[in-house]
Length: 494
Image 1 (cartoon, one colour):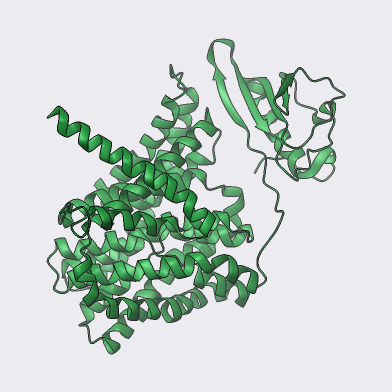
Image 2: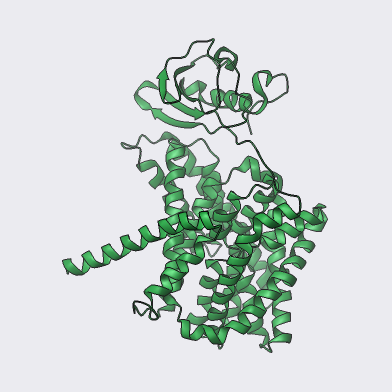
Protein backbone atom coordinates (compact mmCIF):
# COMPACT_ATOMS: atom_id res chain seq x y z
CA UNK A 1 0.00 0.00 0.00
CA UNK A 2 2.77 2.44 0.96
CA UNK A 3 4.60 1.69 -2.28
CA UNK A 4 1.47 2.28 -4.37
CA UNK A 5 0.88 5.59 -2.56
CA UNK A 6 4.45 6.63 -3.30
CA UNK A 7 3.96 5.89 -6.98
CA UNK A 8 0.68 7.82 -7.13
CA UNK A 9 2.05 10.85 -5.29
CA UNK A 10 5.20 10.81 -7.40
CA UNK A 11 3.15 10.67 -10.60
CA UNK A 12 0.92 13.56 -9.47
CA UNK A 13 3.94 15.65 -8.50
CA UNK A 14 5.60 14.87 -11.82
CA UNK A 15 2.50 15.91 -13.76
CA UNK A 16 2.33 19.18 -11.80
CA UNK A 17 5.98 19.97 -12.44
CA UNK A 18 5.63 19.24 -16.15
CA UNK A 19 2.50 21.40 -16.25
CA UNK A 20 4.30 24.28 -14.52
CA UNK A 21 7.10 24.06 -17.08
CA UNK A 22 4.44 23.96 -19.81
CA UNK A 23 3.22 27.37 -18.64
CA UNK A 24 6.68 28.80 -19.18
CA UNK A 25 6.93 27.20 -22.63
CA UNK A 26 3.49 28.44 -23.63
CA UNK A 27 4.35 32.01 -22.64
CA UNK A 28 7.51 31.97 -24.76
CA UNK A 29 5.77 30.45 -27.76
CA UNK A 30 2.54 32.42 -27.38
CA UNK A 31 0.73 29.07 -27.22
CA UNK A 32 -2.21 28.48 -24.83
CA UNK A 33 -1.01 26.34 -21.94
CA UNK A 34 -4.47 24.77 -21.51
CA UNK A 35 -3.96 22.77 -24.69
CA UNK A 36 -0.69 21.43 -23.33
CA UNK A 37 -2.51 20.19 -20.23
CA UNK A 38 -4.97 18.32 -22.43
CA UNK A 39 -2.03 16.81 -24.30
CA UNK A 40 -0.49 15.64 -21.02
CA UNK A 41 -3.76 13.91 -20.12
CA UNK A 42 -3.95 12.20 -23.52
CA UNK A 43 -0.35 10.98 -23.16
CA UNK A 44 -1.22 9.50 -19.78
CA UNK A 45 -4.34 7.81 -21.20
CA UNK A 46 -4.96 4.62 -23.12
CA UNK A 47 -3.18 5.86 -26.25
CA UNK A 48 -0.06 6.79 -24.29
CA UNK A 49 1.08 5.28 -21.02
CA UNK A 50 -2.07 3.18 -20.94
CA UNK A 51 -4.14 4.50 -18.02
CA UNK A 52 -7.79 3.70 -18.70
CA UNK A 53 -10.33 6.14 -17.32
CA UNK A 54 -13.92 6.18 -18.62
CA UNK A 55 -15.99 7.28 -15.63
CA UNK A 56 -18.13 10.12 -17.02
CA UNK A 57 -20.02 10.67 -13.75
CA UNK A 58 -16.79 11.08 -11.75
CA UNK A 59 -15.36 13.34 -14.45
CA UNK A 60 -18.45 15.52 -14.29
CA UNK A 61 -18.30 15.77 -10.48
CA UNK A 62 -14.57 16.53 -10.36
CA UNK A 63 -14.98 18.96 -13.24
CA UNK A 64 -17.68 20.90 -11.41
CA UNK A 65 -15.56 20.97 -8.25
CA UNK A 66 -12.61 22.33 -10.21
CA UNK A 67 -14.89 24.87 -11.89
CA UNK A 68 -16.05 26.14 -8.49
CA UNK A 69 -12.43 26.76 -7.47
CA UNK A 70 -11.63 28.43 -10.80
CA UNK A 71 -14.64 30.74 -10.43
CA UNK A 72 -13.57 31.45 -6.85
CA UNK A 73 -10.12 32.51 -8.01
CA UNK A 74 -11.65 34.59 -10.79
CA UNK A 75 -14.01 36.40 -8.41
CA UNK A 76 -11.33 37.05 -5.80
CA UNK A 77 -8.90 38.54 -8.32
CA UNK A 78 -11.46 40.62 -10.26
CA UNK A 79 -11.30 44.30 -9.32
CA UNK A 80 -14.82 45.68 -9.00
CA UNK A 81 -13.67 49.21 -9.78
CA UNK A 82 -12.37 48.02 -13.15
CA UNK A 83 -15.34 45.86 -14.14
CA UNK A 84 -18.14 48.05 -12.72
CA UNK A 85 -18.51 50.12 -15.93
CA UNK A 86 -19.06 46.83 -17.77
CA UNK A 87 -21.48 45.32 -15.27
CA UNK A 88 -24.70 45.46 -17.30
CA UNK A 89 -23.05 44.47 -20.60
CA UNK A 90 -21.48 41.55 -18.73
CA UNK A 91 -24.84 40.53 -17.26
CA UNK A 92 -26.55 40.67 -20.67
CA UNK A 93 -23.71 38.71 -22.29
CA UNK A 94 -24.01 36.02 -19.60
CA UNK A 95 -27.79 35.63 -20.03
CA UNK A 96 -29.30 36.99 -23.24
CA UNK A 97 -26.25 36.10 -25.33
CA UNK A 98 -26.34 32.54 -23.98
CA UNK A 99 -29.98 32.09 -25.06
CA UNK A 100 -29.35 33.60 -28.51
CA UNK A 101 -26.22 31.49 -29.03
CA UNK A 102 -28.08 28.30 -28.09
CA UNK A 103 -30.86 29.05 -30.54
CA UNK A 104 -28.59 30.00 -33.46
CA UNK A 105 -26.20 27.08 -32.92
CA UNK A 106 -29.00 24.57 -32.44
CA UNK A 107 -30.86 25.68 -35.57
CA UNK A 108 -27.70 25.67 -37.71
CA UNK A 109 -26.60 22.19 -36.56
CA UNK A 110 -30.13 20.84 -37.05
CA UNK A 111 -30.11 22.06 -40.65
CA UNK A 112 -26.47 21.32 -41.55
CA UNK A 113 -25.72 18.08 -39.69
CA UNK A 114 -29.27 16.75 -39.41
CA UNK A 115 -29.25 16.45 -35.60
CA UNK A 116 -32.64 16.13 -33.94
CA UNK A 117 -33.69 19.31 -32.13
CA UNK A 118 -32.87 18.06 -28.64
CA UNK A 119 -29.31 17.04 -29.55
CA UNK A 120 -28.77 20.15 -31.67
CA UNK A 121 -29.85 22.45 -28.84
CA UNK A 122 -27.68 20.46 -26.42
CA UNK A 123 -24.69 21.23 -28.65
CA UNK A 124 -25.71 24.87 -28.56
CA UNK A 125 -26.12 24.92 -24.77
CA UNK A 126 -22.82 23.18 -24.13
CA UNK A 127 -20.97 25.61 -26.41
CA UNK A 128 -22.79 28.76 -25.26
CA UNK A 129 -20.62 29.25 -22.19
CA UNK A 130 -17.26 30.97 -22.46
CA UNK A 131 -14.63 29.37 -20.26
CA UNK A 132 -13.55 31.15 -17.08
CA UNK A 133 -10.18 29.38 -16.93
CA UNK A 134 -9.35 30.26 -20.52
CA UNK A 135 -10.48 33.87 -20.14
CA UNK A 136 -8.71 34.49 -16.83
CA UNK A 137 -5.44 32.94 -18.04
CA UNK A 138 -5.35 34.54 -21.51
CA UNK A 139 -7.17 37.87 -21.36
CA UNK A 140 -5.30 39.34 -18.41
CA UNK A 141 -2.10 39.19 -20.43
CA UNK A 142 -3.58 41.22 -23.31
CA UNK A 143 -3.30 45.01 -23.26
CA UNK A 144 -6.83 46.15 -24.10
CA UNK A 145 -9.13 48.55 -22.29
CA UNK A 146 -10.29 47.56 -18.83
CA UNK A 147 -13.90 47.91 -20.01
CA UNK A 148 -13.45 45.08 -22.52
CA UNK A 149 -11.55 42.88 -20.10
CA UNK A 150 -14.14 43.60 -17.42
CA UNK A 151 -17.06 42.64 -19.67
CA UNK A 152 -15.39 39.37 -20.65
CA UNK A 153 -14.41 38.52 -17.08
CA UNK A 154 -17.92 39.12 -15.80
CA UNK A 155 -19.42 37.17 -18.70
CA UNK A 156 -17.15 34.17 -18.23
CA UNK A 157 -17.70 34.21 -14.47
CA UNK A 158 -21.49 34.34 -14.69
CA UNK A 159 -22.56 32.62 -17.93
CA UNK A 160 -21.62 29.12 -16.75
CA UNK A 161 -24.67 29.23 -14.51
CA UNK A 162 -27.13 29.94 -17.33
CA UNK A 163 -25.57 27.39 -19.69
CA UNK A 164 -25.54 24.75 -16.93
CA UNK A 165 -29.26 25.24 -16.26
CA UNK A 166 -30.15 24.80 -19.94
CA UNK A 167 -27.96 21.71 -20.33
CA UNK A 168 -29.54 20.06 -17.28
CA UNK A 169 -33.02 20.89 -18.59
CA UNK A 170 -32.36 19.50 -22.08
CA UNK A 171 -30.46 16.43 -20.84
CA UNK A 172 -33.32 15.57 -18.47
CA UNK A 173 -35.62 15.08 -21.43
CA UNK A 174 -38.61 16.81 -19.88
CA UNK A 175 -40.88 18.86 -22.11
CA UNK A 176 -40.23 22.58 -21.86
CA UNK A 177 -43.07 24.69 -20.41
CA UNK A 178 -43.65 28.36 -19.59
CA UNK A 179 -42.49 27.61 -16.04
CA UNK A 180 -38.92 26.82 -17.09
CA UNK A 181 -37.87 30.44 -17.87
CA UNK A 182 -39.27 31.52 -14.50
CA UNK A 183 -37.40 28.68 -12.80
CA UNK A 184 -34.16 29.70 -14.51
CA UNK A 185 -34.71 33.32 -13.45
CA UNK A 186 -35.32 32.17 -9.86
CA UNK A 187 -32.13 30.11 -9.82
CA UNK A 188 -29.99 32.96 -11.16
CA UNK A 189 -31.46 35.67 -8.94
CA UNK A 190 -31.45 33.59 -5.76
CA UNK A 191 -27.98 32.25 -6.54
CA UNK A 192 -26.68 35.80 -6.89
CA UNK A 193 -28.36 36.90 -3.64
CA UNK A 194 -26.93 33.91 -1.77
CA UNK A 195 -23.49 34.83 -3.10
CA UNK A 196 -23.86 38.42 -1.88
CA UNK A 197 -25.05 37.23 1.55
CA UNK A 198 -22.21 34.75 2.05
CA UNK A 199 -19.66 37.24 0.77
CA UNK A 200 -20.88 39.97 3.13
CA UNK A 201 -21.01 37.61 6.13
CA UNK A 202 -17.58 36.21 5.27
CA UNK A 203 -16.03 39.68 5.09
CA UNK A 204 -17.33 40.70 8.51
CA UNK A 205 -16.40 37.37 10.09
CA UNK A 206 -12.85 37.42 8.71
CA UNK A 207 -12.29 41.01 9.80
CA UNK A 208 -13.21 40.14 13.37
CA UNK A 209 -11.47 36.76 13.51
CA UNK A 210 -8.13 36.54 15.30
CA UNK A 211 -6.81 33.42 13.62
CA UNK A 212 -3.53 32.05 15.03
CA UNK A 213 -1.75 31.76 11.66
CA UNK A 214 -1.63 33.92 8.52
CA UNK A 215 -2.16 30.90 6.27
CA UNK A 216 -5.60 30.26 7.78
CA UNK A 217 -7.10 33.43 6.30
CA UNK A 218 -6.80 32.28 2.65
CA UNK A 219 -8.24 28.88 3.58
CA UNK A 220 -11.20 30.47 5.34
CA UNK A 221 -11.84 32.85 2.44
CA UNK A 222 -11.96 30.05 -0.14
CA UNK A 223 -14.11 27.97 2.22
CA UNK A 224 -16.70 30.77 2.32
CA UNK A 225 -17.00 30.73 -1.48
CA UNK A 226 -17.30 26.94 -1.62
CA UNK A 227 -19.91 27.11 1.15
CA UNK A 228 -21.84 29.63 -0.97
CA UNK A 229 -21.83 27.12 -3.84
CA UNK A 230 -23.19 24.39 -1.57
CA UNK A 231 -25.87 26.67 -0.11
CA UNK A 232 -26.95 27.76 -3.59
CA UNK A 233 -27.19 24.19 -4.81
CA UNK A 234 -29.14 23.04 -1.75
CA UNK A 235 -31.56 25.95 -2.25
CA UNK A 236 -32.12 24.72 -5.84
CA UNK A 237 -30.49 27.92 -7.07
CA UNK A 238 -27.33 28.44 -9.09
CA UNK A 239 -24.42 27.35 -6.91
CA UNK A 240 -21.90 28.37 -9.56
CA UNK A 241 -23.19 31.95 -9.60
CA UNK A 242 -23.32 32.01 -5.80
CA UNK A 243 -19.66 30.98 -5.58
CA UNK A 244 -18.53 33.59 -8.10
CA UNK A 245 -20.53 36.44 -6.56
CA UNK A 246 -19.37 35.56 -3.03
CA UNK A 247 -15.76 35.58 -4.24
CA UNK A 248 -16.32 38.91 -6.00
CA UNK A 249 -17.60 40.45 -2.75
CA UNK A 250 -14.75 38.96 -0.72
CA UNK A 251 -12.07 39.93 -3.19
CA UNK A 252 -13.16 43.57 -3.25
CA UNK A 253 -13.38 44.02 0.51
CA UNK A 254 -10.74 44.94 3.07
CA UNK A 255 -9.77 41.43 4.10
CA UNK A 256 -6.90 40.66 6.48
CA UNK A 257 -3.81 39.45 4.60
CA UNK A 258 -5.55 40.12 1.29
CA UNK A 259 -2.42 39.67 -0.85
CA UNK A 260 -1.70 36.31 0.75
CA UNK A 261 -5.30 35.29 0.04
CA UNK A 262 -5.07 36.32 -3.61
CA UNK A 263 -1.76 34.48 -4.05
CA UNK A 264 -3.23 31.34 -2.50
CA UNK A 265 -6.36 31.61 -4.69
CA UNK A 266 -4.23 32.07 -7.80
CA UNK A 267 -2.22 28.95 -7.00
CA UNK A 268 -5.42 27.03 -6.28
CA UNK A 269 -6.86 28.25 -9.58
CA UNK A 270 -3.81 27.02 -11.50
CA UNK A 271 -3.98 23.68 -9.71
CA UNK A 272 -7.67 23.34 -10.62
CA UNK A 273 -7.02 24.23 -14.26
CA UNK A 274 -4.15 21.77 -14.54
CA UNK A 275 -6.05 18.97 -12.83
CA UNK A 276 -9.21 19.59 -14.83
CA UNK A 277 -7.59 19.67 -18.26
CA UNK A 278 -5.35 16.68 -17.51
CA UNK A 279 -8.41 14.76 -16.29
CA UNK A 280 -10.37 15.61 -19.44
CA UNK A 281 -7.43 14.62 -21.62
CA UNK A 282 -7.23 11.34 -19.72
CA UNK A 283 -10.92 10.69 -20.33
CA UNK A 284 -10.68 11.18 -24.08
CA UNK A 285 -9.94 8.34 -26.50
CA UNK A 286 -7.97 9.50 -29.57
CA UNK A 287 -9.47 6.64 -31.61
CA UNK A 288 -12.98 8.10 -31.15
CA UNK A 289 -11.91 11.63 -32.02
CA UNK A 290 -11.47 10.79 -35.73
CA UNK A 291 -15.22 10.38 -36.17
CA UNK A 292 -15.84 13.65 -34.30
CA UNK A 293 -13.59 15.90 -36.38
CA UNK A 294 -16.20 16.90 -38.95
CA UNK A 295 -19.09 17.69 -36.55
CA UNK A 296 -16.66 19.37 -34.17
CA UNK A 297 -15.21 21.64 -36.85
CA UNK A 298 -18.66 22.43 -38.27
CA UNK A 299 -19.90 23.35 -34.78
CA UNK A 300 -16.78 25.44 -34.22
CA UNK A 301 -17.36 27.42 -37.41
CA UNK A 302 -21.04 27.94 -36.55
CA UNK A 303 -20.30 29.11 -33.00
CA UNK A 304 -17.33 31.33 -33.86
CA UNK A 305 -18.50 32.96 -37.09
CA UNK A 306 -22.27 32.93 -36.66
CA UNK A 307 -23.71 32.34 -33.19
CA UNK A 308 -21.18 34.32 -31.16
CA UNK A 309 -21.19 37.47 -33.35
CA UNK A 310 -25.00 37.48 -33.57
CA UNK A 311 -25.44 37.00 -29.81
CA UNK A 312 -22.89 39.74 -29.04
CA UNK A 313 -24.49 42.16 -31.49
CA UNK A 314 -27.99 41.57 -30.11
CA UNK A 315 -26.77 41.89 -26.52
CA UNK A 316 -24.51 44.94 -26.85
CA UNK A 317 -26.11 47.09 -29.56
CA UNK A 318 -28.49 48.67 -26.99
CA UNK A 319 -25.39 49.77 -25.02
CA UNK A 320 -23.98 51.48 -28.14
CA UNK A 321 -20.78 49.45 -28.03
CA UNK A 322 -18.65 50.29 -31.12
CA UNK A 323 -18.41 47.61 -33.80
CA UNK A 324 -14.65 47.20 -33.23
CA UNK A 325 -15.21 46.31 -29.60
CA UNK A 326 -18.09 44.00 -30.56
CA UNK A 327 -15.79 42.25 -33.03
CA UNK A 328 -13.12 41.76 -30.35
CA UNK A 329 -15.68 40.50 -27.82
CA UNK A 330 -16.98 38.06 -30.44
CA UNK A 331 -13.52 36.64 -31.15
CA UNK A 332 -12.61 36.58 -27.45
CA UNK A 333 -15.42 34.16 -26.56
CA UNK A 334 -12.91 31.51 -25.54
CA UNK A 335 -14.00 27.91 -25.01
CA UNK A 336 -12.09 25.62 -22.69
CA UNK A 337 -12.83 22.92 -20.16
CA UNK A 338 -16.34 24.10 -19.25
CA UNK A 339 -18.02 22.89 -22.49
CA UNK A 340 -16.41 19.47 -22.06
CA UNK A 341 -17.58 19.27 -18.44
CA UNK A 342 -21.10 20.30 -19.43
CA UNK A 343 -21.05 17.69 -22.20
CA UNK A 344 -20.57 15.01 -19.53
CA UNK A 345 -24.08 15.67 -18.22
CA UNK A 346 -25.88 14.19 -21.29
CA UNK A 347 -23.67 11.09 -21.02
CA UNK A 348 -24.66 10.48 -17.40
CA UNK A 349 -28.31 11.03 -18.39
CA UNK A 350 -28.02 8.54 -21.26
CA UNK A 351 -28.89 10.98 -24.05
CA UNK A 352 -28.46 9.39 -27.54
CA UNK A 353 -25.50 10.91 -29.36
CA UNK A 354 -23.92 12.20 -26.12
CA UNK A 355 -20.55 10.50 -26.73
CA UNK A 356 -20.26 12.13 -30.14
CA UNK A 357 -21.11 15.44 -28.44
CA UNK A 358 -18.25 15.05 -25.95
CA UNK A 359 -15.77 14.03 -28.63
CA UNK A 360 -16.86 16.80 -31.00
CA UNK A 361 -16.63 19.43 -28.26
CA UNK A 362 -13.15 18.16 -27.37
CA UNK A 363 -11.99 18.64 -30.96
CA UNK A 364 -13.62 22.05 -31.12
CA UNK A 365 -12.03 23.20 -27.85
CA UNK A 366 -8.55 22.26 -28.99
CA UNK A 367 -8.91 24.01 -32.33
CA UNK A 368 -10.58 27.16 -30.99
CA UNK A 369 -8.21 27.49 -28.04
CA UNK A 370 -5.23 27.39 -30.36
CA UNK A 371 -6.73 29.66 -33.01
CA UNK A 372 -8.45 32.21 -30.79
CA UNK A 373 -6.05 32.21 -27.86
CA UNK A 374 -2.95 32.70 -30.00
CA UNK A 375 -4.48 35.36 -32.27
CA UNK A 376 -6.21 37.59 -29.68
CA UNK A 377 -3.26 40.02 -29.36
CA UNK A 378 -3.08 40.29 -33.16
CA UNK A 379 -6.84 40.89 -33.41
CA UNK A 380 -6.63 43.57 -30.71
CA UNK A 381 -3.89 45.40 -32.62
CA UNK A 382 -5.69 44.99 -35.96
CA UNK A 383 -8.86 46.50 -34.50
CA UNK A 384 -6.89 49.34 -32.92
CA UNK A 385 -7.85 48.31 -29.37
CA UNK A 386 -4.40 47.46 -28.00
CA UNK A 387 -3.29 49.66 -25.12
CA UNK A 388 0.25 50.25 -23.87
CA UNK A 389 1.54 51.57 -20.61
CA UNK A 390 -1.77 51.39 -18.75
CA UNK A 391 -1.14 52.14 -15.08
CA UNK A 392 -2.12 49.72 -12.34
CA UNK A 393 -3.80 50.85 -9.15
CA UNK A 394 -2.02 50.62 -5.82
CA UNK A 395 -2.87 47.48 -3.85
CA UNK A 396 -3.01 47.91 -0.06
CA UNK A 397 -2.64 44.81 2.12
CA UNK A 398 -3.58 44.64 5.78
CA UNK A 399 -2.55 42.44 8.70
CA UNK A 400 -4.32 42.77 12.08
CA UNK A 401 -2.49 43.45 15.38
CA UNK A 402 -5.31 42.36 17.66
CA UNK A 403 -3.66 42.95 21.02
CA UNK A 404 -2.64 46.51 20.08
CA UNK A 405 -5.91 47.47 18.38
CA UNK A 406 -3.99 48.37 15.22
CA UNK A 407 -3.25 47.11 11.73
CA UNK A 408 -0.21 46.99 9.47
CA UNK A 409 -0.85 48.31 5.97
CA UNK A 410 1.63 47.51 3.20
CA UNK A 411 1.63 48.76 -0.36
CA UNK A 412 3.96 49.20 -3.33
CA UNK A 413 3.95 52.31 -5.51
CA UNK A 414 2.89 50.92 -8.94
CA UNK A 415 4.49 51.93 -12.27
CA UNK A 416 3.04 55.17 -13.69
CA UNK A 417 1.35 55.95 -10.36
CA UNK A 418 0.53 59.59 -9.55
CA UNK A 419 2.11 58.86 -6.18
CA UNK A 420 5.57 58.99 -7.81
CA UNK A 421 7.31 62.22 -6.81
CA UNK A 422 4.99 62.94 -3.86
CA UNK A 423 6.75 63.91 -0.61
CA UNK A 424 5.89 61.79 2.41
CA UNK A 425 4.38 64.75 4.26
CA UNK A 426 2.06 65.32 1.28
CA UNK A 427 0.36 61.99 1.91
CA UNK A 428 -1.41 63.72 4.82
CA UNK A 429 -2.39 60.48 6.48
CA UNK A 430 -5.08 60.80 9.18
CA UNK A 431 -4.32 60.98 12.89
CA UNK A 432 -3.45 57.52 14.15
CA UNK A 433 -1.51 56.46 11.02
CA UNK A 434 2.19 56.80 10.24
CA UNK A 435 4.68 55.44 7.69
CA UNK A 436 7.13 53.42 9.77
CA UNK A 437 9.29 51.82 7.08
CA UNK A 438 10.24 52.30 3.43
CA UNK A 439 12.02 49.73 1.25
CA UNK A 440 13.75 51.03 -1.88
CA UNK A 441 15.96 48.83 -4.05
CA UNK A 442 16.13 46.23 -1.25
CA UNK A 443 17.33 48.84 1.26
CA UNK A 444 15.10 49.46 4.30
CA UNK A 445 15.04 52.68 6.33
CA UNK A 446 12.74 54.93 8.30
CA UNK A 447 11.62 57.73 5.96
CA UNK A 448 11.52 61.42 6.83
CA UNK A 449 8.72 63.86 5.95
CA UNK A 450 10.95 65.15 3.14
CA UNK A 451 11.38 61.69 1.59
CA UNK A 452 10.11 61.69 -1.98
CA UNK A 453 8.30 58.54 -3.10
CA UNK A 454 9.38 56.66 -6.21
CA UNK A 455 7.92 53.86 -8.33
CA UNK A 456 8.37 50.39 -6.78
CA UNK A 457 8.85 51.83 -3.27
CA UNK A 458 7.41 49.52 -0.64
CA UNK A 459 5.88 51.17 2.42
CA UNK A 460 4.76 49.89 5.82
CA UNK A 461 2.07 51.95 7.54
CA UNK A 462 0.92 51.40 11.12
CA UNK A 463 -2.63 52.60 11.77
CA UNK A 464 -5.21 52.30 14.49
CA UNK A 465 -8.40 50.40 13.71
CA UNK A 466 -10.29 53.70 13.70
CA UNK A 467 -7.92 55.26 11.16
CA UNK A 468 -7.58 52.25 8.90
CA UNK A 469 -10.37 53.00 6.42
CA UNK A 470 -9.47 56.67 6.01
CA UNK A 471 -5.80 55.75 5.58
CA UNK A 472 -6.57 53.33 2.75
CA UNK A 473 -8.84 55.88 1.09
CA UNK A 474 -6.14 58.54 1.26
CA UNK A 475 -3.48 56.24 -0.22
CA UNK A 476 -5.72 55.30 -3.13
CA UNK A 477 -6.70 58.92 -3.72
CA UNK A 478 -3.04 60.01 -3.97
CA UNK A 479 -2.33 57.06 -6.28
CA UNK A 480 -5.14 58.11 -8.64
CA UNK A 481 -4.84 61.91 -8.58
CA UNK A 482 -1.50 62.86 -7.00
CA UNK A 483 -0.78 65.35 -4.21
CA UNK A 484 -3.76 67.52 -5.18
CA UNK A 485 -6.26 64.65 -4.98
CA UNK A 486 -8.68 66.58 -2.79
CA UNK A 487 -8.72 69.51 -5.20
CA UNK A 488 -9.70 67.10 -7.96
CA UNK A 489 -12.49 65.66 -5.82
CA UNK A 490 -10.79 62.24 -5.57
CA UNK A 491 -11.54 60.48 -2.27
CA UNK A 492 -10.35 56.96 -3.06
CA UNK A 493 -13.57 55.52 -1.66
CA UNK A 494 -14.61 53.36 -4.67
